Image (cartoon, rainbow, N blue to C red):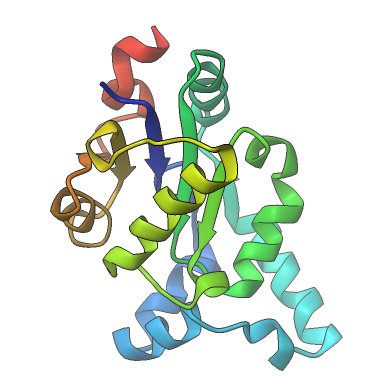
Length: 184
């Protein structure tokens, strides 16, 4: 029985376009992994921060059904978590811009906060451990459903830990298609 849903944030709950989405195309995988594990905000001047905030405010938005699906799952009693590879600047923008939405989640794991990025299984282990510890629960791996848009980063590590997992292809599906009966 599913007791908790974990979600990737970008391209699962929120869409990223334009300048934000091009970063991964400009640098190597190794460089991107380094950035995702760092608090790069400390390297930014106030002027750079203002420019970055302008770019992000135009380029990140929730998918239309995300709020309804998440609120419905919460009302149904499911525990909710986010596991997302984001740098510290993106994380701050998301936290400040989507405060009400994020309050629906019991646990949020940002790679830049824990120094581990998906597909490292420690990101998934950390999220489940924190959920259980913070709420005095005993949810097992096989009672968690991970929903993400990337097989290698989101699904493979979850499945290897005994979690259930579903791929969300935003070109063909919405969260309704993936979660279905729980939010009908």
